[in-house]
Amino acid sequence: MEYRKFKADSLFDGYQFLDPRMVLITDYKGKIIDIIQESEAGDNIQLFKGILSPGLINCHCHLELSHLKNVIPPHTGLINFLCEVVTKRNFDSSFIQQEISKAEKEMLENGTVAVGDISNTSDTEAVKRKSKIRWQNFVEVLSFTDEKAEENILHYKKIAQQLGVDHRTSLVPHAPYSVSTKSFQLLNELTKNKIISIHNQEHPAEDELFKTGGGDYLKLFKLFHINESPFPITGKSSIRSYLPYFNNNQTIFLIHNTYIPEEDIIWANNFATTNGLKLVYCFCVNANLYIENTIPQLLNFIKNDCNIVLGTDSYSSNWQLNITKEMKTIHTNFPTIPLETILKWATSNGAKALQWENELGSFEKGKKPGVVFINPDLTNSKKLL
Image (cartoon, rainbow, N blue to C red; front, top):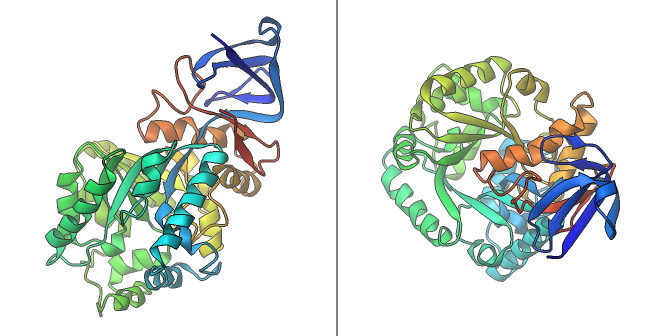
């Protein structure tokens, strides 16, 4: 058997930095054989000035929106951004396919090995069928009223059937401000033991909607010919209003979390523990900067022992689809968070959250997690294997 041997200034195994004198040994198909001392590794060792890491895990993306690259300007604010996405989706299908293909290629080349991808349409099916990336499809249900709950879910079930031939696929709620009570109840039954996601507390108006029935989301509803909030006024924050709908052992990716107060983090974690749910907090910091020009208070999540992973969001809300760029932004804005911790979020945490930890996320014997070179200043990354 022929081997490949990799050594770098920093060798990160998915959990921690190892002694820099260690050498990673793989076969030519990428299976991890061992990690050994350089003195025992023999000849033909490839040397790198930077970080060697397992393949990167992007836990939140919208590949189908890749045609919106540079279409929506930065810093519009979330409500205006959502209105732009709703009104600017009608592009030529061949252009949409071209941009999806380019975005998938970009992610593969920068070392992404698995993606949790939002899919409201079947536009990405052809590219994913041929992709070397592993995909978890999240088919988002938008269903504003109870009257159309069953009809809407049937529509998204058909999309899930088209996407789920080659990749794991599940129905998920889009956001608290787009899913009715009955729709949540139906989704709870349809997602028993599954991994799901929901956009969570991206804007202060989300809590205002549930506390008072008013706020800026009414502007979005008017695009759907809805003149007032269709959701019950609970007097509580959004997460306290919708999380109790779930009680079927789901793993729930909470996406963005830009404006969640610490008391809601504490409440949500306690609720999940009591009710058999697993919460995963997914951050897409460059998208938060693109849309709102702000970043979640990550230290609050670390303080409360939250399970953290990273995503890029879409080309409608980011300058690139590169998890290394997300790590750099976090490292720059939160210099007290160890780089080792951030790398763990991008590798083994993501693999575990997507339930692919037996194959991805870390350099352990028998796995094929991919091998990625990351520039020492976190400006870029490149797939090696």
